[in-house]
Length: 272
Image (cartoon, rainbow, N blue to C red; front, side, top):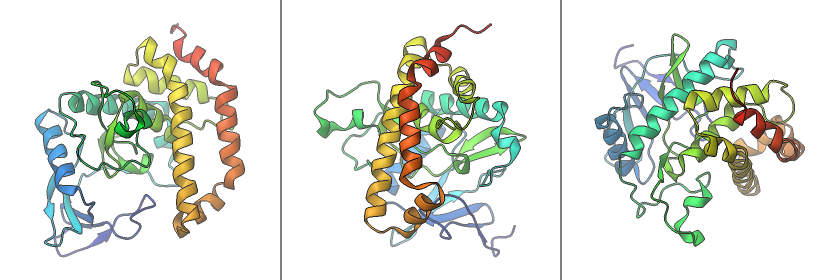
């Protein structure tokens, strides 16, 4: 593709139609803290993580940002079968671990107004909890549409808009909600959750805490959706209706609570 050609990049809900590719550059809406986020992406690269876009600057008015285009395959709904394999999920977990290892070597600036709507509630300095030295900057949105695959394996993450301080386990939990159907519809859910945990390399302590963290993430996502629907966001109103309404949310959260022990036992079970 030449620099004169323009391609709208699809995927996601917030910036529909507003993300375009021109040659090797992607232009998209910029957040108010884009300069800080760009500095973080450059620091990740300096720490050895090559699975994120390179920031190339912002427009003069600060409303648009430019990032390097990452070639590969990004699965969009309805997701292709190759993106739903255990191998694909395992590779997502491995890449997430690499991201977290790089992030762990970087300081977390708590003075920045990071997006809080889907962030780890235990990392909120206004919640009264003591600062956690193990906090990193989590991606918070590792859905299939934000993963670039090459030859069937996760190679890069895109759309760092929801980056915010949190526990690494929180990022694993939010990823699980996107990649494992945790509503009783999939008899292989416990197996898929184990694939994610094994690929990431969770410790026994982390495995014991994963399902409660997923329940926390579900509650945060539901509250986020409720606020957007209450505000009349047409995108979220339509998505809620298309995805089964509040009844599906009820089933999801009730199933998680009812199967907490079973899922955790599978996560902790020794591999044979």
